[in-house]
Amino acid sequence: MELTDLIISAAKIGGLIFAVILPMVAYSVWAERRVSAIIQDRVGPNRVGVPFTKIGLAGLGQPIADGIKFLLKEDFTPGHVNKFYYWLAPALTMVPALLTCAVLPFGSELFGEKMVIADLSVGPLFIFAIASLSVYGIVLAGWASNSKYPFLGGVRSSSQMISYEIALGLSLVPVLLIFGELNLGAIVREQSENGWLLLPLWGEGAIWNGGVDRLLLLFPALIAFVVFTTSIFAETNRLPFDLPECETELVAGYHTEYSSMKFALFFLGEYAAMIIGSGLIVTLFFGGWSLPFGWDAMLMGDATEVPWWLGLIHIGTFFAKVTGFILFFIWVRWTLPRFRYDQLMKLGWIVFFELALLNVFITAGILILTRSN
Image 1 (spheres, one colour):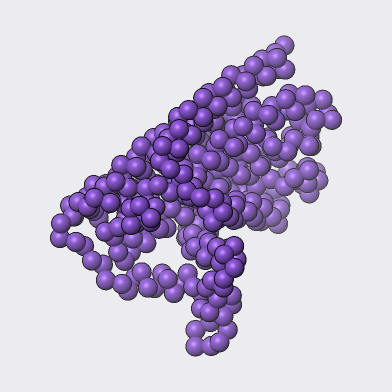
Image 2 (tube, rainbow, N blue to C red; image 1 turned 90 degrees about the vertical axis):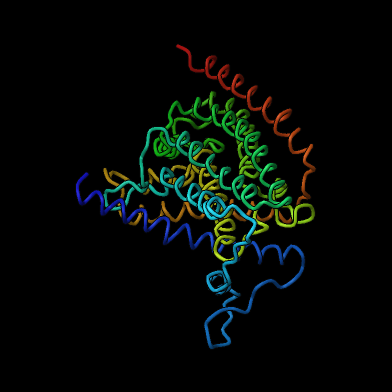
């Protein structure tokens, strides 16, 4: 790899993770607190703004104040814990969430460079392989704390994530069958030209252009979307699937014994996983960075390369869609009640597993009927 390639890759990593993902994590927490306050008819954080002034900026300075608080709080390690694994667990939760964003195409092109850190031909498989490592951080946190409630939280998390990973993987198979592609960038380009998977209204895949297969495939695609999105909720331990850390039963679950920045890493890891999950949903089902109704082709005109201004629009479009799904995650958390644990396991093994498996055969049957020579 040449020096120029290294510099470009470093710029992408720095720009995506440090300039976009981490600020989005911080302000997702602010959005969570503000939206929950609106739902519960209260105020929420609205004071912290410009220092030494009375300019509150709707509390937009709150994430910065929270970060400073986490940095300055005492980093207390209880004497009864297994110190090595106790320190390792928060990193094992945060790092996989950030690694998975490497294969997400967050834009088309900018100055001739693809807006993806690693343009792998096996993007979804890479995400599943890396994201599944985060369960080790949670299990280690529960076990290394040498405390009853964290241990129960760790056990719950491991069984929950293993259960819903099966449904998550199977729900993705119909999507990959439809596109015949494992490269996430190619999947987005296909949707840009021929309609989003859940909105096939333009290009050759449009319903009125003879795209009968896309019309028939809307049903299994919708099933895949519901199963995949719900499984993302379970994989990220978001309510109504937050059994590993539910306050009313387990105090704080697997991170009960943690404080300061180690606790903050668990907190940030959950929100980072939620953002990456939202990005994956947008990429697979809603066209990723692409604009709707064939606007990409219209704005491109006769150009052979994506203009820089259109590249910026694509980046903004992707993160606007992701922001919409983050708000959906927040709305669900403050609207639905928590499952009982037996209900959670029944939904994963008896409902979603069978539904996702059946959906694979439905999709394959439709493809054989409509695309055979």
